[in-house]
Length: 465
Ligand code: FES
Ligand SMILES: [Fe+2]
Image 1 (cartoon, rainbow, N blue to C red):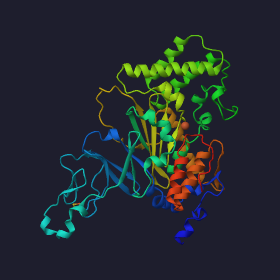
Image 2 (image 1 turned 135 degrees about the vertical axis):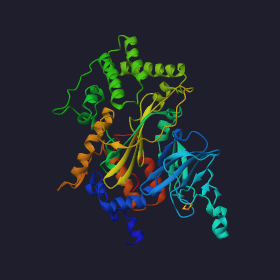
Image 3 (image 1 turned 120 degrees about the horizontal axis):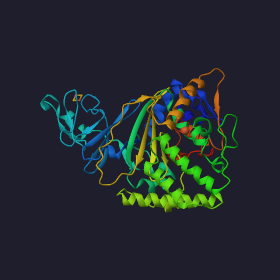
C-alpha cells in the first residue's frame, strides 16, 4: 500500500467509521496491535517514572513499553533519558533501577561503562578496537526526549514530537495548582490484566458504570449527583436527599466510602475532618446547593489548615476549587490518568504487553510532612487482576475486564455502541489512535491530542479529522 494511501483514515484496519461504534477487532487483532506498536507508541509522550523514584543525583530507573526500553537518570543538570542499549554490541544496559553516580552504567557483557551524562568512561582493552569505532561522540548513549510535568518524567521516542505541554491541553490548567505541592507515593500496586490496554483505559472513562459496578458508591450518591437517569431494576435504591442536611450527611459517607474503597486518594485525616466539619456545622441550610457549598468550603479550608499545621506542602484548596474546577478523572493520552480529590489524588498508568494483556499500575498520592524521611518508591512486582489484597473499587473495576475481553470475541459481536454524551471519550481516544495509525499530519495529531486529553464523562467531540 502506498504511503499516501495510508493517510486516509479508512485505510486503517478496523478503523472507526461511525463515531459511536468501536469495532471489536481493535482489542485483539494482531495486525492492529502491530500497527499501534509501529505508529502510536513511538510518537506519544509516555509517563515514564515519578521523579520521586530518582531523588538523588545518579539515580536511574528503567521504563519499558513493548520492545523499547529507556533509562531515565537524574543528573546534576536535570533529568536525562537514554535508549537502553550498549554501544558495543547492543546489550540492554540497565534493568530495574539503581544509582550510577560512582560506578556509572556498566554493560554486563564486556564491561563497557557510561556516566550519567551519557559519556563513555571505560572500554575494556581499547587497543584491540579500531580508533574510528571508539569515537567519543559516537560512543555516547543515545539520548531520548524527556520532559517533566506533574512530578513525573515523560519520554517520547520521536525527536520531532511537539513539546509535552502542547499535547496536554487544558488538563495542565486544571491540575497544575494541585500538583505543585509535591505529592508522594502512599502506595503503588501493579497487576497484569488479561485484556487489551485500551479496554483497561476505557473502564475509567465514564462514571456510567458506577451504579452496576460500584453499588456501594451509588448507594451514597445523592439524587442530585446522578446524571445517568433513574435507578434501574436490581440497582440500589436511590436515596432522596430532600434537604441540605441529608445531602451533606450522604456526602460525608461518600467520602468515607471512597477512601475505604480506594485504599487512598482521600487521606484518613481528610475523612476525619469531613466528619468533624459535619458535626461542627450543626444545622445546615435547607437548600442543597447552599448546604453543599458551606460544607465543602469549610472542609477545604480545614484540610488546608491541617496540612499547614502538620508541616505538609499545601495549596489554596478553597480558591483552587472555586477557580479551577476539575473532573474526578483527568486523562492524558494515551495511557495515564489522574483522579484528584481534596489534597491528594490517585494516578493510573496502563501499558500494552500483548494484544490481550496489559500492565496496570495504580499509585495513591498524598502530601506528607516535609521533614518526614520517605524512601524512594520502587516498582512493585505485578500481581493478578483478582488479587484479593487490592482495594475494593479497583478490584470491582478489574472484575469486569476479563469478561469484556472474552465477550469481544463472541460470534456476532461486531462493535461496541457508545453513548455520545458520556462515553464520548472512548470514541475520541479511538479516533485519535486511528489518526496516529494513518500517520496524519503531526500538527493535527498534536491538536487532536490536546483536545482528547480531558476529564471523564466527556462527550464525543470533533478532533479535527
Ligand atoms: S555488548 Fe556491552 S560491552 Fe559488549
Ligand atoms: Fe470504576
